Length: 120
Image (cartoon, rainbow, N blue to C red; front, top):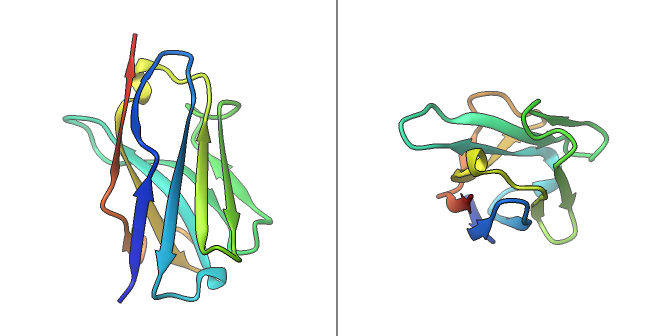
């Protein structure tokens, strides 16, 4: 059974930082592209960042470029999202996602989500 378990969310003031983690189990982690999506209240779930299974390719949404950094540790089956210079508009539930060899808008697996709230 595949599980993606996010952690690291919370409440932070604007300009602050948070680091999200997603621990994966039940899959061959090094064969999966991993990524993060977020969903704000009343809005559609949106892409945030993705990292290729090898770590050789990384993509970001324009809204987070220069502020967020995605990384992965294949030895720990974990993907991270370092979020700096947080803004109130970053407030959302953040979901970890996994896609076999590549990550599309319809990933193979989702985590349960972790809440990030940025106060102004």
